[in-house]
Amino acid sequence: LESKEQQALSRFLAKLLLRSPLNEEQQRAILSLEGRLVRYSAHRDIVSPGERVQESCLVVEGLIGRFDQMASGQRQITAFHVAGDMSDLHSVVVPTAAWSITALSNATVMMISHAQLQQLIDRHEAIALAFWRETTVDGSRLAKWTGNLGRKGALSRLAHLFCEMGISMEMAGLGTRLRYELPATQEQIADAVGLTSVHTNRVLQELRGEDLLTFRSGRVEILYWDRLVALAEFDPNYLVLRRPDESVNARLD
Amino acid sequence: LESKEQQALSRFLAKLLLRSPLNEEQQRAILSLEGRLVRYSAHRDIVSPGERVQESCLVVEGLIGRFDQMASGQRQITAFHVAGDMSDLHSVVVPTAAWSITALSNATVMMISHAQLQQLIDRHEAIALAFWRETTVDGSRLAKWTGNLGRKGALSRLAHLFCEMGISMEMAGLGTRLRYELPATQEQIADAVGLTSVHTNRVLQELRGEDLLTFRSGRVEILYWDRLVALAEFDPNYLVLRRPDESVNARLD
DNA sequence: CGAGGGGTTGATCTCCTTCAACGGAGGTGG
DNA sequence: CCACCTCCGTTGAAGGAGATCAACCCCTCG
Image (cartoon, rainbow over all chains, first blue to last red; front, side, top):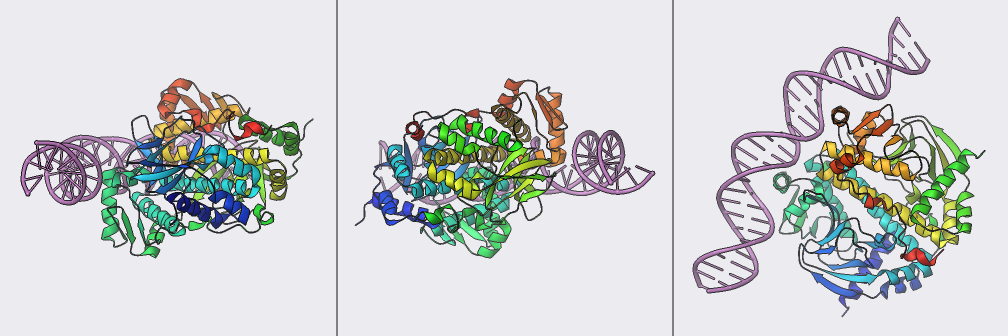
């Protein structure tokens, strides 16, 4: 039986391999990372803004989110992270957090020291590039959400969120694009799409009424993928789901 | 007399040095990058979505922007780039663009081949980390804008934009936070803050009416920095304006 | 002189917020 | 086992921030 740590690390590795080639040795190096498991119950902060972190956190179980917080107390989720996601890989190069990381559901994370990650980067250029690429995709998602929030209505935004999470979940082996667990409350969904929970609730009903999808007790079921994609104007290209073969990495495996 | 290319490269280097330590050799390596100058007149696309790019573009003169485009034709600016900014550094690791890059004003850019950048990365780990760090800051900006667009009103958003650009300009040596050139139209500003140009116009008048700032013919003049910062809830931490001294780089210079 | 891009203004509409109340499910303690 | 509490979801009514539509102005440039 595989330990939880091993399982999380191999999920993480699989995610890296989606976009970056790594040779045997490099893969072993990733899998032999060590860290301590920490459990958080829903709504607990894992990292607070301004904090200087010495370790990155790899999600083992549950859903965690990155938040931007306003003076008024309003919050905006800027990223969801599920099992196998390293939620603050970028803290290796920018250790002072400008955001908070919070457990959205009950969650288990594995804290991995920057020292170890730095060592991997030093020894294996391909890993450095893989990490860089991963954070770049994170940036792509954010750019897409800037567009969604700036220029789309509530219905499209929610549709887009469920499309994006669907593809992410499928890629992560945590369900299919049509059925997956998203253990978040409507209020948290609202914080992700920049709406109030009241209006999010009404729009979710509308999506259900149109027979497009259901979101109930942390479970998403999408009934008509194509119609949802059309409504969301969802184009998965920004998620970079295949390796850029002729790129910098071609010479490195 | 310094050539335009040299000037742009030293601006770029200065920007890197703000956040990352590079030794003499590494600095020379950056400065000896070669590229061709290309001029674009306002509103011309430099990179189109889906395009696979083989070179990154360093701004020499003028203002360029990254856009996300909706099916309806609406656009959202996700980044402004000024002299010394490498607008698609991330394309080195993710060469297929999911966005478009457009000249907002008349602009000159220097196209630098990925091959050269890859060589720098191969030979100097510190440069790879500096590049990674730079794109990470880009991601921070996007995360902040996700928050601004999702949770702030028009007045705060515009105020935030002018604060952010002020600090960026000052850091880049292109003016002070209180007075700088931003050769954009009100419509382009609107595309950045997720509003219509009509409403942007009204809010700009409100900002002027409150004696906070003026924005006229591409020039920003801020009258009360502190009040503007307060209105915007602007906290420059996310821009990472100093080097994280104990981080991974400490060992590399 | 005309054309076009950018800026400005007014009137109307609508999407989303705000406020307030209620319902249900699960957990906890008596 | 029931009573209670709290979190989450749901509903209604009213208000507001910003969109939309449509002029008109000014300036520059051909």
